[in-house]
Amino acid sequence: MLPWREPGGDAVSGKLLFANRNRGPLTRAYFSHNAWKPALAAGINRSRETGMHALRYHYASVLLDGGVSIRVVSEYLGHHDPGFTLRTYAHLMPESEDRVRDAIDAAHGAPAESVRNTDDIEG
Image (tube, rainbow, N blue to C red; front, top):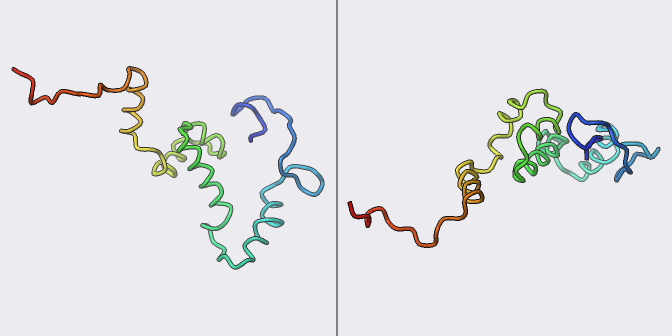
């Protein structure tokens, strides 16, 4: 969760789910040094694909799959340009044709069960 209720909104306080030894917030450096790198010591090759980037990528993919707007994902990832986020993660976005059909169906009702074939229409 972000330290605000809405991107760019006022800061809020809350209990931390995970904390450092001093009961403060985890920083990326703290997490990497005390949790991630020791976990990698189990034999996983260290690379961009197995590091913190993989967690960010997973986070972005879950948000986009859930229908979160690219603008909001961009803000949550700390990107200054939603265009950059779109170029980086566009391949993770659901098929736009399916989303268009779903949006129209939701607004106007699902198509009728029996749709006449246009060849059967008498001219």
